[in-house]
Amino acid sequence: MPHRAATVARRADAAFDAAVARLSDYLTIPAISCDPSHADDVRRLAARIRDDLAARGLHRARLLELDGALPCVVAEWLEAGPDAPTILVYGHLDLQPVEREHWRTDPHEAVEVDGRLYARGAADDMGGWVSHLAAVEAWLAETGGLPCNLKLLIEGEEEIGSPNLERFMDAFPEAFDSDVMVLTDCENPSTMVPGLTVSLRGLFEIDLTVEALSADGHSGLWGNMVPDVSVALMRLVARLTDEDGRLRVGRVEVPEAWVVGSERVPLTTEVIRGGAHLLDGVDPLPLRGRTAPEWMWRQPAMTVVATTLPTHDRKKNALRTTASATLSVRVAPGQDWRELYGAIRDELMRDPPGGVRVTVVAGDSPGEGWLYEPRGVAFEAVDRAYSASWGSPMVQVGVGGSIPFVALFGRRFGDLPLILNGVMDPQSTAHGPNESLDLSVFRKAIAANVHLYAELATCGLGQ
Ligand SMILES: [Zn+2]
Image (cartoon, rainbow, N blue to C red):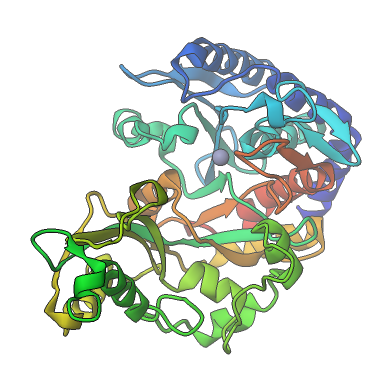
């Protein structure tokens, strides 16, 4: 089988320009799901993809429809027989909106510059699932079949947070029924190193309020004798942080083996500096004996996202009655958000400076993180497929934020092998202006998929 896969991979490589042309064609339709005026574009693209999948030899190509939802495109090829495993490939066809004035080229016309293809959706996520279509076509053209069964599911609402995906799971369970899932909408740590996403952080908010006076007071008369709520608020927030400004409450133990593996992730000072737009002279926070991936993906974090501190346009020389802040807290993967909230709350409520009244309230709709252990024969197959195509096994990466569809698949199908990969890299600027796909990554992704189907077919999955 590896021999046959190598032949198929060569065939896919010879057809690479056609795959880029197909991708470029899909990228001309502004399928922007958050904008109702583009709903027809989402539907038009979905119908075109459905027709293409049928024309390329996939079976039962169709649209899944639900009231009040944009459609999913599905198709399958199940001729490998009942003993062969079934792979579900998930991607999405919808796009983020564009701010045209910040684009150097037309966002809805793919343009190749220096080995990168620029267009909205090139990397997020049209290139992701089209890399599977190219691999499927090469298998069918070279051998007349696939080594395993395959279902393709392309969502139309990922960029608005997949609000109906769970309803689709409930209404069309057979479209999701599979032995292994490849969820192809994630990022690689570089164009040379393929990434396997295994964790997300959760998210909740805290509203903190400090009260001291029943009416504003003259700062000259009462300064030094009564509490300034603004200072009290800042001191309480500062309690939660260490000398570097990081959240110090609720840190978790990360397994030593993960930490050692994370040293292979190329998250260098330069990558952080460029990615986060640090000003000259401002440095990333010191690592203090941990790795950058651990700080960014595996430890809880806090950001002050709003305050009622006096603003310039409300300036007056007075001690104020009250001050409040909203804190956004990222929950470590696997951490219980209630425990983290409780620890932060205790720290804020203890021994209030000057006896000020402190109120702490958790915001609505907290989101849990997600932590996945990639183990078993499927992931050994993944390593072989990526070594053959990228020359490197996948490196485990995390996401510091939260992706609703990932959390949903994790919750519903966490007992299956979940392979979260994609064609994005740190320069892709998904969701931003001048989104682009590195074409060397696209080429390697197609080859990886060719090998992955062969390796998953023979790895002993489900036996
Ligand atoms: Zn995406």
